[in-house]
Every structure is written in C-alpha cells, then in structure tokens.
Amino acid sequence: MVYIKIISLCIILAGVETLHGITRTIFIAPKIGNKQAKQYSVISGTVLAFVVCYIFVPELDIDVDHQLILLGLTLSGFMAIFDIILAKFVVKQKWQKVMSDFNPAEGNFLLFGLVALVMIPYVVMKLKGLI
Image (tube, rainbow, N blue to C red; front, side):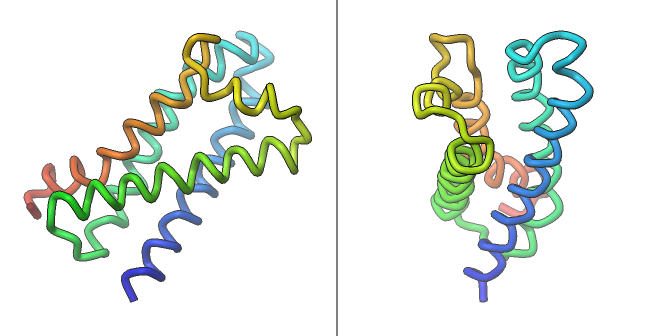
C-alpha cells in the first residue's frame, strides 16, 4: 500500500511542478527572460515541493531517517526523469538543451532543486515532530 501512496505522491508532485513551469513560462518569462525565470523558479519550485511533501509525506507512515532520505531520492529521481521526458518528448527539445537544464555551470539551477528534494521528506517529518 505504501508503494501506491509513493507513486501517487510522485504524480501529484509532477503535476504541481508542471503547472508551476507553465505558469513561469506564461507569466514570468516574458517579463524577465526565460533563463532568469528558470533560475528563480528553482526557489518557488522547491517551496511547492515542500508544501506537497508537508501535506502527503506524513500519510506514508515512514519514520526512519534513512527511509525518508530514500523517499527523497525516489522523488528526486522521478522528477529528474519526468523533466527529461517532458522536455525531450513533449516540448521536443534537443538532448543538449534538455541536459543543460541540469548544469549549474551554464547558469541552470534545476540540479539544486533536485538535491533539496532529497532532504525535504526528512525535514518535513522533523518539523512535524514525527521523527
């Protein structure tokens, strides 16, 4: 049963982050540019991921530190794969552009958001006093 809840969390998180990306593209990028909008959106995207996890992670009844980190790794890996699939096969970007989104040396901070996502389930449970 917990695996179904984890898959559901991945799907919810992907949906929220997709809506976040659409909102960024429509409303923010035209005003400040796509690159800067993507840089700022790592912060807002991380906050959104935190909120989603704050709501749903306690329902998973995971209270062991390493299992929460493993959950974070699962969420982060899922989101990385989801971003790659979305960029390559839906948006039709070239592989070089898809992979550059993960490269901080090119001014792209998505990798930092994925690293933060690894720790979010643990932080949520710690803040709620459940571990």
